[in-house]
Image 1 (cartoon, rainbow, N blue to C red):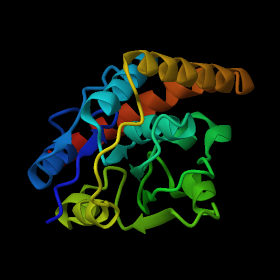
Image 2 (tube, helix red, strand yellow):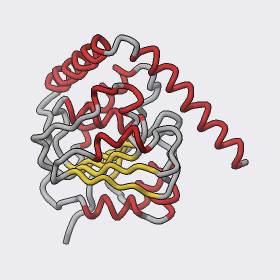
Image 3 (cartoon, rainbow, N blue to C red):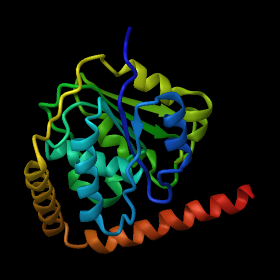
Length: 225
């Protein structure tokens, strides 16, 4: 009998440990965990929390939503994480135009989900990822907005994606000890620093994009009340 996958979820900018996707995963996957990555404007702290979560929880698969997808992608690029990954409307392209890549030596499945009606992370922002010629990367476009709640939650596509991309194996830890956590965090920070140097206006643009995301999400909530 297959055991339930250990799902680690990185939430988005305006979500959290009690957000809709986190609660959905807890309902469908008993062995799921959502670390509190806020405040996202303290990106080094969020990265540290994410790395520690991988070390302590030992997940089989990581799901990253929006800004949480950005965190997951950073960890993929830094080789902190090398197993199955699902990226839901990852916000990477909004921050680093030159960082929109995935390691070619990553052998496990990576699923990237984009919404046709997403105005926060538009489809064309993620198009370069769709053009990757990697056999293990699946690019899925759905009729949904940035939150992807209708397709991923109401239609249970997220549950199906996890089950289809999960292999029942003994969970292995890619992080050996606490000092290894520190080393990997420093690697991530060095990588981020180099990105800011290559794209000097990235920090300013990042702040502006985060404000736009927050405003767009707030306006959506107000319309739904």
